[in-house]
Length: 98
Image 1 (cartoon, rainbow, N blue to C red):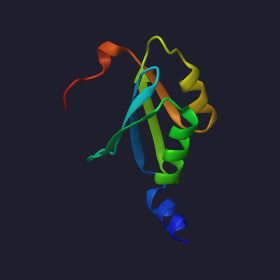
Image 2: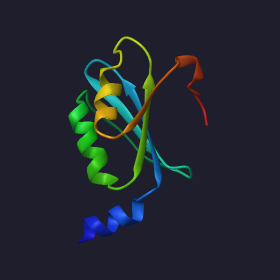
Image 3: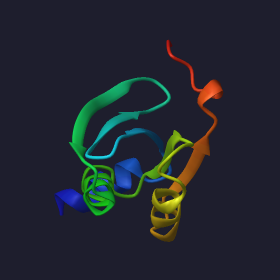
């Protein structure tokens, strides 16, 4: 019951997931329009990322993004196939400060 309540509370809200991709680990930051919720590092595992997002933000609209580069579009396709909007970003367009 508690998971359903949480899902209803998050339904339609935007959560932004920034991913700094490296070969063995990813740095993840999750934010809303108002605040930064969490920043953490995880192994470079796209399935683990999706499980984390689905568990912690059920019903929310997740918009993920990462810098274009060496790792290509595999993560983009994986997230899109699971209903998570994803954007591959030009490095020059990513701000380094708030």
